[in-house]
Image 1 (cartoon, rainbow, N blue to C red):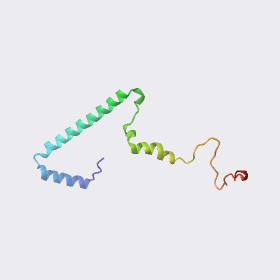
Image 2 (image 1 turned 180 degrees about the vertical axis):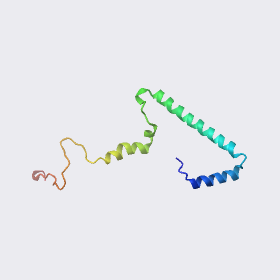
Image 3 (image 1 turned 90 degrees about the horizontal axis):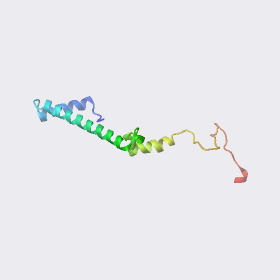
Image 4 (image 1 turned 60 degrees about the vertical axis):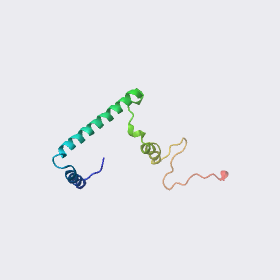
Length: 106
């Protein structure tokens, strides 16, 4: 989530010890944990309340689908990656097959 490696974490821990001191650090860590738990609980409650208010037709709604980047990727980019377009009456050409040519149409 934050993409913090072990080296960065150690640097943050050492800075925290110098800034807050070793005697206050456990209390600050406990408060940070409580804050994180309450934030997760609030987000879970908001998500469940939203799904209850939207009704049963939106029960399988994923909030990540509302992200514009995910929306574009799902509906536009994924469609472009399809190998063959589907059109009625058309078939993909075989390898080394010449496309049809109509002398009367040119």
